[in-house]
Image 1: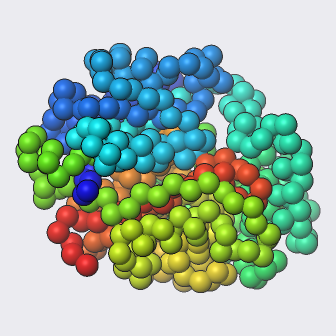
Image 2: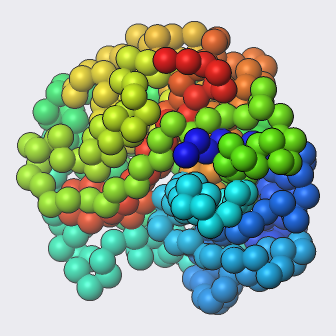
Image 3: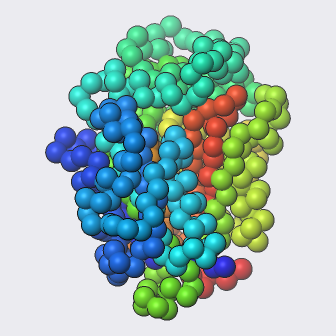
Length: 416
């Protein structure tokens, strides 16, 4: 069954002391309904993604029904989805499969997150649940060992509190430095590129350009990462409305602006040895997604990937097959992943500069790619984008993300 995205909405990402989770969800959903040209009555089911209300607001149960009831959704199935940083993409996966199953013709996926509460320690503590708590110290030690063997220059690490996950991303970076000769300057090139992209995204958290030297000279976090290479703690909401072919005609959705879902694959991590790079979850999910879509990496025109730190982009474009293993850093340094380059990556600015409101992040990526395929991105538009790929990972098990979603979208009528 063919499934289409017919409406998307996204709040600005940033710090919004005046907005709560319900406000962020309502703004994103209202924009998605308006974009689709339909009312709430068209929606047969809703999937609401959130990860931190339980930690920061003590709203552990039913955040989805509470948030969506506040804007008038009643009676329909409303499910709350939590899958760490992949929660928003998982909500989309649920919505797509709800429609594909024949249980309904129109479904809503929405993610909303209020992370800035004025208490840095509490904000950072939420990430401690991103892996198995019972074995947290063992998890940490295994991942740090993964990046062992790289000398850390004096003064290149901050004594300030930070999420342990930045230590993990630093270990990923050191692994690439040791195995493939990646340099800190190449990682900084990714960050500089993404901040340059975000200048043209009105919904991005940051709108400031950084040169590569600026990124390198910025405050260190944990070697080789500096502050501009890392995603900020972010508030925001994003939503998407999906429908069947039958609903397209019944509700009069605009086919010319509809985006076809060619694939949406969710995988969980598998045990692997460090050298077994083809067992990484993004690699596995991408191969299934390409098979479902009937295309290959060479057909992709634009990508949005999970760059909670700049090294994340390098790793994931390799896993997506957009280049070979060990090649992404050089690809980025020479401009191939910039808008106008061979394969633009994160034209939105990515998580590093657009922001990372955990449960809204994946749907924020879908918002960007939908707009790209429609040709609606103005100064950050990728020319003639026909096929787009999205990657969004969440949590940590073993050496990898615990769950990963890879989606492939196409411009309606793009052909193969």
